[in-house]
Structures are given as C-alpha cells and as structure tokens.
Image (cartoon, rainbow, N blue to C red; front, side):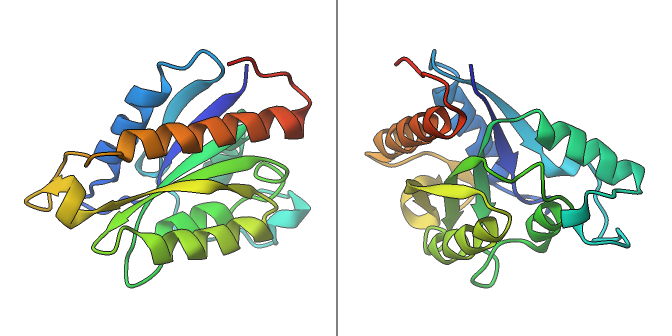
Length: 187
C-alpha cells in the first residue's frame, strides 16, 4: 500500500497549515488504498540550505539532512500543504525541497494551497520547483481562500465542495502512484 506524506509547508508562528494538514489527513485516512501521515517541517528544524554539495550527488553531510532524507525516502508520494507568501511558497518549503534530490525523484504529489487568493500562485511555483526534482504534481488541486474557507481568517471551515475537490485530488494522486510504481491500487 502506498505511503503518502502530507507535508506541512511552513513553520511560521500562527500558521494555518497545521489545520489544513489535519483536515486533509482526516479525509485521506478514511481511504483503504493508501496510508497517509503528516510530515511537519517544524519537526525537522532544517536551517537555510547548508549542504556544501548539490543534492543531486546524494552526499549529505549534516545530521539534519540525513534525518530529512530518511523521512522523505520512506514515502511513495506527497500532498504539499502550502500557504502563499508574497506570491510564492514559503522559503522553508523551498529549502526543504532543495536539501534532497533522489528522495523526491520519480514520485507524485498533490497540492493544497491557501491564502487570500487561494494559494494559486504558490501552487504554480511549487509545481515548477517540483518538476525540477522530478516530482509530478497531479492536475487536481485544492485552493482554500481566507474569505470562503476560514472563519475570521483564522479557523479552517472548508466551504461547499472543498471535500469533493480534495477527494478528487487524492483519487488522482493514488492512481498516479499506482501507475508510476507498477502497484495495482484497488479502490
């Protein structure tokens, strides 16, 4: 059964990403075709990229990079939960992606963005960055806006249809994992 990591893509105090990741996990965990687990960047305390050699070489020297590589390497696919900061993804998420290469390569991902405009620009940028580490982001994605999906811009209360959007993205993601790994996924 494929293992899917739900990546909490920010470490900012007061972040909404934890709420969003728990919502994604709550729906995803009902599925019988994959297992889902939350992977919080805050648990890894990754500094600004400090490896002396490019990640493509796989020569990780720091304990934090080795721990991150081990964690990501155990997963078959990802759901990235990202806010939109100034039209893009948080720097900590970019760094987390830049630390590794082989552990991302050849895997699939789903995207869940949030923000004033639903995190759409962040997801566009994330799609581009993922392509450079050879992660294929599925077409379906979830875009949560502060106006429609958060009470007083703080508490997640997904609007009508959001659960259906999430399920559609998860369906596409699990099917993609099955195709790329050669595993038959029954649903």
